[in-house]
Length: 401
Image 1 (tube, one colour):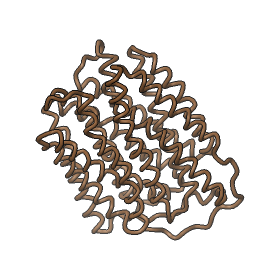
Image 2 (image 1 turned 60 degrees about the vertical axis):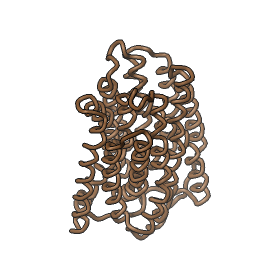
Image 3 (image 1 turned 90 degrees about the horizontal axis):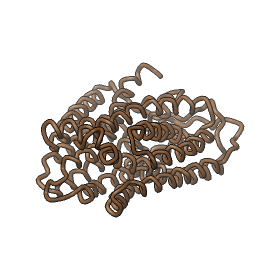
């Protein structure tokens, strides 16, 4: 990677941490909110649904704008908007204003993925490695969210869990904007893997259509596991870790800290081997790990869930490489927007689904059966992806800002 791109990559990687951190503060904060305003877990959790929905749905217009306007300016909007929305959430006087703040967080955070990932896959000759490193930063945000939220909620109150990181994000956005004005950060987009044979137009259309179908189900796995983990550990391991938000949040942080290595390994594998085989094999193993989690009621549950989440996050890197393989550079951000509409928007239906299943049964067994079904569908689609490819690389396209 050129030295001139490193400052930009640094901001992009930190942005990935923020995008996931802010979206996952609430599943842990909700543990401290139980009883507040006379509401329980099953009633409080759905207050974040609109935010999770917009986190995905907002990706499509963000990607469309990145292909036609300015990726760098959109990243400024991401930092400043997400930070301000988090501060407002921490100041919410009641459940409806809390829901509004969470919705705004989702809206501004939705800018990150289609804009940043579309730029990053063309910024390095080894896109899998670049995405893997970026994924480690994302995993840090996911793991840090539970730990930070639990720590601030237990030490101060639930409001601090939104206000403190919100102020940090605002400062980062101001810094990025100043560096952009000074010409120290630049975001130009280039074509993907010119050294590899490219799929034919028909294969690209079929492969992309099939992959987007699978992404709805892989997104459900991510959303459901993300929101269920704090309560799952509290419910099944309460005799060992206690019932406080900090202990459950700490275990979630451990899980996602471990999973960050999966991002890097997935990226390295995608640079060395055919992504179209890595994808279904990973989800086949995922089925087995989720089945093991279903029946585990002791401390081994943490290790099994950590393995499952590591598979999920590692395969996300492979998934992003597959999308770039099937998409021309000029439309890349728009297509990533379509991906995240499914992976983070429509799949947000997993949040009320978790609340519905848990509210009806008082356990998470039904949730795990739903997760197993999603992983099996993703495996089947991966096995059906087109396996042939053209004999020559596609011509390079002009960079797009």
